[in-house]
Image (tube, rainbow, N blue to C red; front, side, top):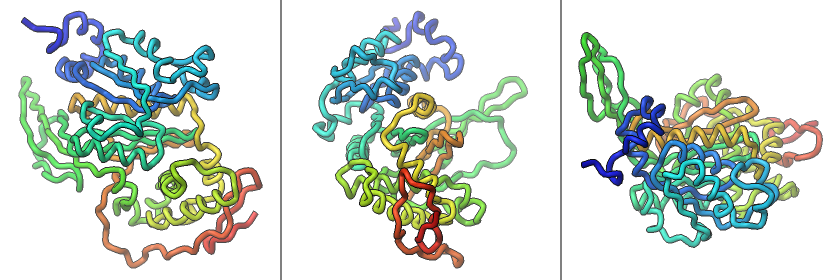
Length: 388
């Protein structure tokens, strides 16, 4: 006899009918047995929790030691004014549980920095949000030791990112059978490991098992863009400067104990130099890193916008669902979202260094002027000087 502990019940089939039609009963059973860790319950994590709980995951642990502040009320829908001063995770717990009482919800009010590496081994997937770079990489390393998938994600106003390290992940796609032989190695990180066929009348469908291999954040953050993005000037110009600014931010945090840049002259000078250095390392044209974008990025740091949280959180949650059900291509490996331009490119960043090109971009001198947050726009020229 089927037991609720092992198999999905008829009541649950009725409850999740629409999504079961989309990804099947077996995938729903995998979701039902999943144990997810979600770190830092701010606006982005609100959206992630909502999507995962409504999808019917088995267990969700939320860890957050911070209290609800007035600024949390702008982009978070699990807390209200009456919760100000209470622990953020505890305050949100009743609303999260009410969305789907079948999900086992666990609240942890410890500081995640106090957790030992083996803590993360108890979860099928760890999702770390709104942390500094050093904490992301520490948790990522712990997940790798335990062979557990890891996601890092964050918001800065109109901008957001999702990084995925699934270590090695197999997934299955369905496609019509082709007469053209399949390539075993599709990309430097993706290979085909198995193909089976099934026949339905005259239609023949292939079930293709693919494998993606991943790099940890500490390597991805120093890896070059694939040659396809840098070989041609047109391709280089299409790379969003958000990638440069995110790398500059993480480098700034490494140098300053994890904090965000302030409007001080010293911080602006340092961030401007770091951004130009990262842009050059990525072999991108300096003309695509203008002072307007740098200023806008700095002004957005630390803020939350509900529409951006909804998109980034929904995209991450859907990827987790795909990974748990082993269906569809997962994020490989850094997704960036620019809410001003409504763009969400994905860059595969791995330590595969292409050969040096003869027309590689020349080195640029360190910038002499910082990007002002409040003054008139400044144009950063090729010689590192600024004009208004």
